[in-house]
Length: 211
Image (cartoon, rainbow, N blue to C red):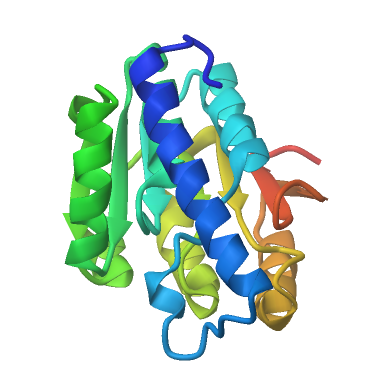
């Protein structure tokens, strides 16, 4: 599954796959998310996970920020790439129980030392975070995409890559996704493309001075 075919990582990813399949079965049986959405894995999926790993490794990124740990699926992909580049992932989430779940699985995958866990309000953490930052994955509550971008953009290194998830799906997140894409198009030096991978992602690269 991952570039180095590490068995421990593959086993942990397989566990996430099984949890995602179980949740999908519940949906098929008519289970409602109402009031329980925060209990769901809501992973970025293997295609997006593989792509962000490729982007991190291709860029040689060492300073990596994940906005929205959730239950740690994307963290596995990022940390596996960080191990190869000699980097580290700063993973941010508001929920202690989600990061505890993620931390356990990252340790079992042999990737715990490549993650710096930050629990709390993403905006407050980003205000204190030092740059330069070389790679960012944005996958938290959608109304926070623009405020988070505004805080992290001045700390990006030249050539930094940003990936924002849920640009096309689910449908209810489209207004926030459209607003985010319009917002970053107006940021000097930011070039972007939207890809129909997973739930739809916007991949951006910071290239100041480029016309």
